[in-house]
Image (cartoon, rainbow, N blue to C red; front, side):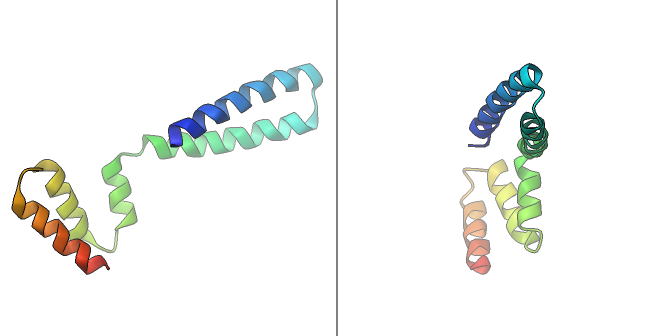
Length: 92
């Protein structure tokens, strides 16, 4: 979803850049600034690793984070799955 949004934003950025160089309008200048800011935020978001997002989102629940990481490393381990389910119940 984020990649689709960044592609659309890139198209908007290209169109605004062309229009700005043709007209030197203040409107397109503002569009360019906004598109660059949102594009930079989107790219930063895209480049952050999923594990880091997990740590940020669940920073108050380190046991849950470790259970998710453990299950990702050992997907066939039933104990890891049970530990994750237990930690999910604690979240709710």
